[in-house]
Amino acid sequence: MIHLQNRMSIINSGIDRTIILLVHKNNTLPIDRRTEGKLPMKKTHIPVIRKTHIKWMALLLCVNVMSMSCMQPPKKSRLQTKDQNHAFVLPEASPFTIGKTVPVPGKLYSIDTSKSGDVVYLAGNLPLIISVPHGGERVPSDIPDRKGFCDGMVINRNNDVKTIELAYDIINAIREKTHGKYPHVIINTLSRTQIDQNRGWGVDCNPITGRGGQAWKDFHEHFIGDVAVPEVLKTNHTGLFIDLHGKPDNYGADIMVGYNLTATDLSNPDSKLNTSAKAYAEKSSIRFLSKKLHAETDFAGLLRGKSSIHENFGSLLQDGMDELNRTHKKKYSVSPRHDLKSPILNLSGGYNIQAFCGVRDDGIDNEYGYTDSRFISGFQLEVCREIRTKNPQIRMEFARKLADAVFIFMSRIGIIERV
Ligand SMILES: [Zn+2]
Image 1 (cartoon, rainbow, N blue to C red):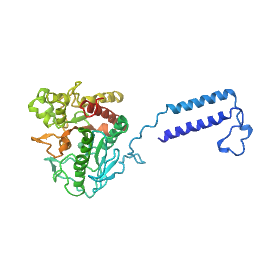
Image 2: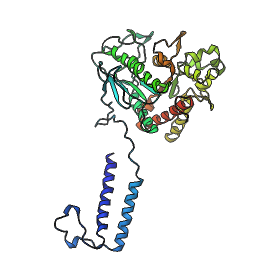
Image 3: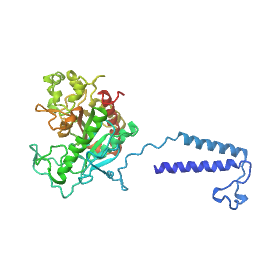
Image 4: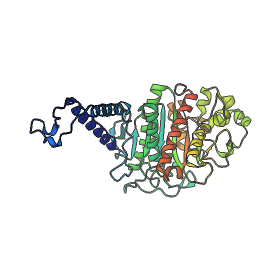
């Protein structure tokens, strides 16, 4: 921006000088604005204006004017997330009172009764919710470390490094695409050593009291359950939910789309996924989408097929990644998709898509009680470490490809108007 402003002032000052000289084309003394009303410049310093000079000056004026008219208005600036050392910082959050605050799209909030900044919500105006549960790295001393086991497994305390930065790249890519609109984004800034925002509330997995317990509630109950989902349903009746994560490199496909279906589930042929008393569709995070699109008999098509009717998200994203791969000589791949239907490894997704995409678990609809979330469909998105951390340019380009795929997908499945 500073560079652009400098360029503008150079052009403007060029026009000023040209106009002043043209005004005095009848060989009268040119006026230097800095000396206007004072002594004229010495004659030896005054250039003699001839007809040929006037032609050149007129040409210069035209070029300057053309430069001005060709110049696009400056693009909307990226959301400011860097400090003077170019380190990533979240903007300061405004206090949010549940039931009172009317969220303003593009504004960042934190629940007023909690420690500000532990969990933040970027208010949106699109039928798209993105949650970032594992990107935080803050370790305040008043939240105890998680220890032992969670859901019968040794506690995983690894953060998904730079997923908050990736989320902001996605937000900016979406703003570019939509002339300034925002998804709803819920970000946890606390380290996974203290809280796991993709696991349930309870003594085994998460703190239930104090600052940590409050942060869990802010993320799930308040900002997603009480605010983002109702906001989306109020204006759009349905929406897409993406739970954004980071996975290690060299572990299956570089980008994994999890629909609450394991690699074992995906190893079944399409015919079995489409039958089996609809069990796979019912347990998936696109359960209501398959009903909405009357895709129960072609659930596999929606999940990993490729047709003009039920194109799947993995294939759409792979189309974009193929372009990125050509540009950067990479081989990034996405699973599942139409030509990688049964990946050997695929992270299926966890608590968040189960809670907010209305999956049927053990015969119970919407077991976690976020009742309206049954109108939301979505998936967990796992992005490899290399894309997230190695090259900010590639991360930004990935965010653009992701935004493209998300909008095509949302239009194909009827969440937004078909594009
Ligand atoms: Zn994660």
